[in-house]
Length: 198
Image 1 (cartoon, one colour):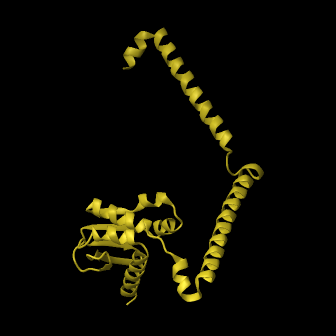
Image 2 (cartoon, helix red, strand yellow):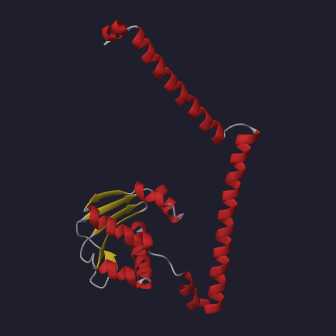
Image 3 (cartoon, rainbow, N blue to C red):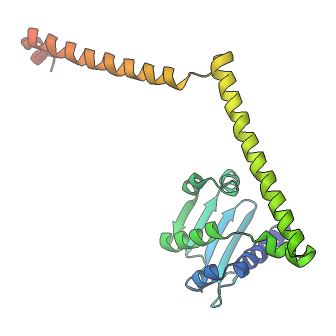
């Protein structure tokens, strides 16, 4: 029951987002009749687009499959572009890539949805307040991370400073260069031993 409900919810959500993005429906029309399987725990569904660009569930064998881990989903929700690399693709890679591009660029127009419930002015105010809250939260997280890094490097020395790491790497490089020069000098002083060891 729950998996079927989550698949139906996925289809309804995608169709709602497609309804808000005419450019996306134009792109999905190009994928009409080509089933794509999505495996993103807890949802496993094979989706297909119709000639109008709307999505529905399909029983046909998928031409492409996208497998997404729960952690990758969270990273995608946080707009982490590197999360795309953790998506496993099988089947028609070009179809999967086109499908992925459409999904990645779909955005929710919350203001339009709220305007139908509370009016245009209130919807704009709610969205603006939500964006400010999210921006404050993100800034707060960044500042907390910076404070933790400073505490870990300056106060308790749990982490090495970037300048110390760069200095250590430079010293290792210099030592490697000196060692290479020393090996060449030894080889010049004892040419017979170098040939014997080879």
